[in-house]
Amino acid sequence: MASFPASILIRAFRSKNPTSLMRLADISQVTVLLDADADDAAAAEEKVKKYFARKGIQLVVFPVRQKKLIRAYRNTQVLLSLVSGDNWHLEYVIRRSRAVFKIGRTQLPGEPLDLVVSDPEGTHFPQTEVFDRMMDLVESFK
Image 1 (cartoon, rainbow, N blue to C red):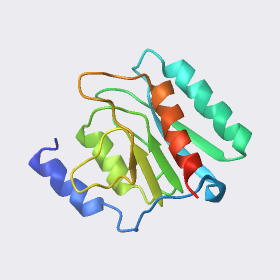
Image 2 (image 1 turned 135 degrees about the vertical axis):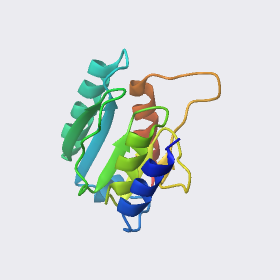
Image 3 (image 1 turned 45 degrees about the vertical axis):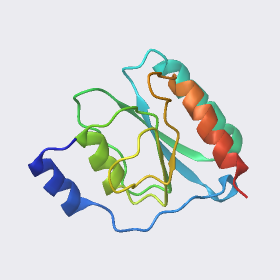
């Protein structure tokens, strides 16, 4: 997890906006954090782009690489992270985001994510499959 100075930084700059689940019909903008180091990065990016284009939802994709700073817009309606694992850079971006609805693969301390689709222990699913499951769940919200 985060070191002591990083945890102070995260706590100082976290968003204080309340979050909650949203219906797909109410979503107009999504920011996706994509694991650019994964084998299926190109396929996942293509799938994400096609899905949101079909739905008429504005999309911003940020490729995330191991040990590089993550640069993502703070002001987005939905933040969706396909990055598995946790590091303080990812935690900082998730906590700092002013998104109304936050989706991810690994819940962080304090539970800042509204929806988590995690891999069963001992297995790792590709981003494309996790994205499909996330969208199945979001589409099922009434």
